[in-house]
Image (cartoon, rainbow, N blue to C red):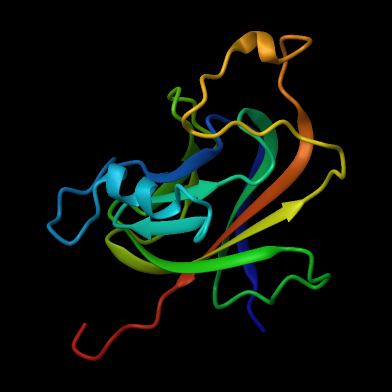
Length: 177
């Protein structure tokens, strides 16, 4: 059975309905890597809601445009067990990390705590889990609508709407790797 090696977690501001998981080296300029715009275009309509390329993954929210979600990044020594309660929407992708250090980030440049994967220039299997936490109605904005901070009645952001768990474990190495 796989063991949890490290975990960083906390509240994180989701902006414009999405956030990234980014390698600390920044974007990859490899010809195999998708540009951020291409990656975003893959998830823009919400299906799939998680996509990854070298040094970057993007995660889309289903609970609102701007809100504070609980985000956890986890390192496992093997494939972690599935969500025991069956409540999580799940997606998985491979992701190469050049520095071996990743963190959540939003479009305003805010970054969450760093998860040290312990191995630079490695390929990782990544599972994203999106868990709805609140049953309250949420105001949705399409990407074509303008968002105005006055849309938030109290000037703050809704909290407790959803949780994200991003799990990393060593990817199986192809022959000749």
